[in-house]
Amino acid sequence: MTCRELTSFIGDYLARELDADARAAFERHLALCPNCRQYMADYERAIALGQQAYDDPAAQATDVPEELVAAILAARRKG
Amino acid sequence: MDETSLVAALKRGEEWAFESVVRAYGGRLLAVARRYVGSDDDAHDVVQSSYLSAFKSIDQFEGTAQLGTWLHRIVVNTALMKLRSRRRRPEESIEPLLPSFLEDGHHVEQFAAWTTPVDVLLERGETRQIVRRCIEQLPDTHRTVLMLRDIEERSTQEVAALLSLTATAVKVRLHRARQALSTLLRRELGSGAPDATLRRALASKGER
Image 1 (cartoon, rainbow over the protein chains, first blue to last red):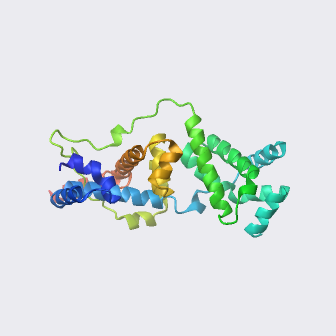
Image 2 (cartoon, rainbow over the protein chains, first blue to last red):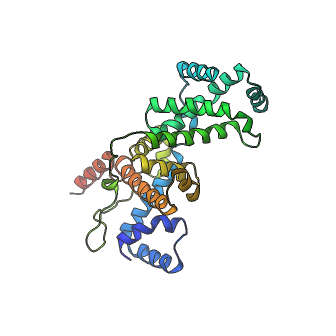
Image 3 (cartoon, helix red, strand yellow):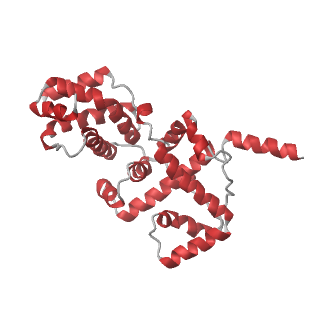
């Protein structure tokens, strides 16, 4: 397995969707290749940071602009 | 005011209840809409039509779900429809953010360990904002899949149905989106970040 192949399998590997042979080949390559280990660490970190980027809803929420409140209520009355 | 009485008032068509539900959830829903459609104007449109369709179908709302969760799902669906209908310039390619390989299959780039651990980064207030900004830079087609799969934690099948894609296409897009995000984060926060490069330069100077 080359670095290119390993890279294309990372998503399936993490989702545990590789068959036993592919999984073994993946892990053999990873054990011998520090660059792929780092690449995969970056990939997993991207997932984790992405997930945590939205865990502070209070900080992201903006006030509802008054004109939006008015527009929604007016549109509802109109039906 | 508890949710059950609010929902009951909505079902009775009481004006104050509509206003109260717009004020209570509007801010959060705007933030959600903006993640998908990008601009404030489009987010306002999405939130407005989501509320209108929620009010129309309030009779179908059952007490088993929470009102906020129910509205959230309506906003996501409406935002996806908006994205689909939006006439846009051909979107930027994600290719430049994907890794490149030598002919023998090795990575071109050497990846370095990050100087700051993730938990330390997350203690900094601006980290989440930086990550959100990086996600916003992804092309719509890829950002949408990343949001639905990794952030909303919907299944591959569900996302495939929502976006009229095959399961394989969802997996490919998710993989590419994560790779692109990883590249952007490496530049902003990791080994490629300006302060990390500077620190390495200073450290190697010191060694001489």
